Structures are given as C-alpha cells and as structure tokens.
Length: 146
Image (cartoon, rainbow, N blue to C red; front, side):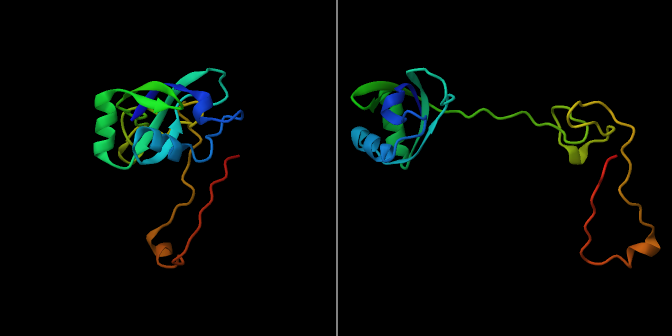
C-alpha cells in the first residue's frame, strides 16, 4: 500500500537511507507485520513529507489499513491508498518504436540511441549448410562496429 504525507525524518536518516529497524517499529505502531518499505520520491530532495510504499505480510492487515485510510508514523498520521506501480511501455529493441516486441518486428533495424534507421547493419557471419555441421557446439560471436 502507498503511504502519503509520510514524515521523512521518521523513516530516513540524514543521508536518505531507510533507518535500521524502522519496519519493526512502524509495524508495532500500526499492529502489522511489515515485509518491506520503499521510498517513492527521490531521497536527495529536501521535502519534509513524501510518499512511501509499505508491503505488509497479510492481506487482512493491508485491507484494514486501506479501509481506515491512515498509517501511524512516529506519532504522526499519514493517509493510505492502494499502490499501483506504473508499467513502462513496451519498446521494440529492433526498430525502437513503442507498442510491440522485437522478436515479431519486420521493420528495418534502428539505432538504439538515435532511433534512426541504419544502413550499415550487416550480418555478423553468414554460414552455408556445408559449414553448419562443422561448427563447434559452443560458439561465441562478437559484433564490432567500425
């Protein structure tokens, strides 16, 4: 679940690292068993209150915290919402376009940094059927672009 308006000093040290044993302390304070805590905003930001994700071990505990919409945090109260991680869009590693995977792509290969179609891509090696049987079972191929 996502805990909004959480006081940074209750969970993070001066360097932005999660304090040792903070999961146990917050677990006792909220009467839950916390498996993991993750901070959502950048730790180097100077904001006093931010959001964090709290993973509890039992679904009944998560339901109770979400239904009550509050989370005790070192004597203060923060409010809870359902955490929905954002999914990155699918990007083709062949043509660099969004919306499909590279294994099914029929478009020309594009540069990974500029996404422009490149004409200098060429097969690394070409093997005819007579050579295929003489290839060792372990073959390493390296591509070097000049």
